[in-house]
Image (cartoon, rainbow, N blue to C red; front, side, top):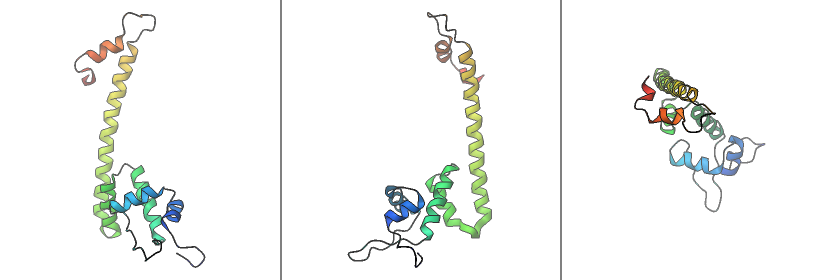
Length: 138
């Protein structure tokens, strides 16, 4: 906190980091950000670095990292770049597997959609295709 800025209470922190208060509390419970001591009769004041830390968590989530994986990244920090790289490569590999799985599903859906004939009201190739064993294993 600087001289010109008021102390970062949980509400101000939420606004500055563009999250809601419950997100901050959730991150505290998960050990992603530290909950400052509450002075007697006062409000907790968060360090300015909390804003960047929350933004880091949100960006890592957008890249597909779980909160547990993000906690690992934060623990490793700048001092263990090789370990961070390994975690990032593992995440990328998982995402590539998910993409391959989604492409398989897309092809299967395209095949099933091509069996639909809107003028045939008594028979639906899509429904029949879903009933067939192993339709995704083509």
